[in-house]
Image 1 (tube, rainbow, N blue to C red):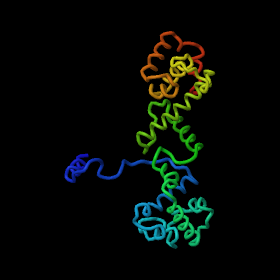
Image 2: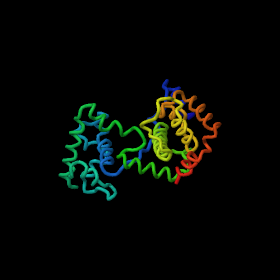
Image 3: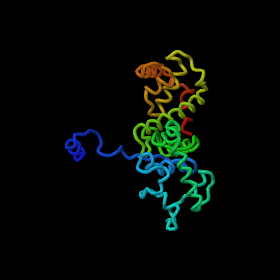
Image 4: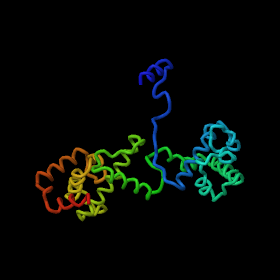
Length: 250
């Protein structure tokens, strides 16, 4: 930190001297892995260091090594070839892959953003099933949602994880309490909304802001007031409510 401050002062600059903080994304094998490989292989093309037809001349890429006879055993390319049209692992197959990269490089900007823009956002790359599996692993590792955090994920990504877990918890609590989330009353302090909010507060670290927006309960501060009245009325001791809380972690 001291060095960064002195460097910026010397150069008259602001911010981090290098790129953003390290970020690791959880990556699903198969199609998602191949998309990341394409993205990396085209990095020098996007940076305008080489043109797409000369991508093999970029000496700091592993791409030329795939085609060489001295390819190390750990440099595995079957996934990339399979997800690029079932190409063979031969010199000819890799030449066709390079041509395929050229096609990807020529796509218009909007299409490239759709294909690759999301690779640097969020906390995982893959299908909904892959995401759900990771979340289930996380829930098993954590007794509560107080310390939910994926290593390598930034603050925004971890917030996204928490919100997804909160949504899953809300769906289960609604089922246990026999409340239809699609048919909630419009009133902000409706009994069903307050009961759900109280149950969420009792079993997770959910924020008032998330509850206020998700359940349409008005201001975040109002959520606390509604839950307080719910508790003072003794509703948290009701058999229905206690049963739902006892079953939520089973």
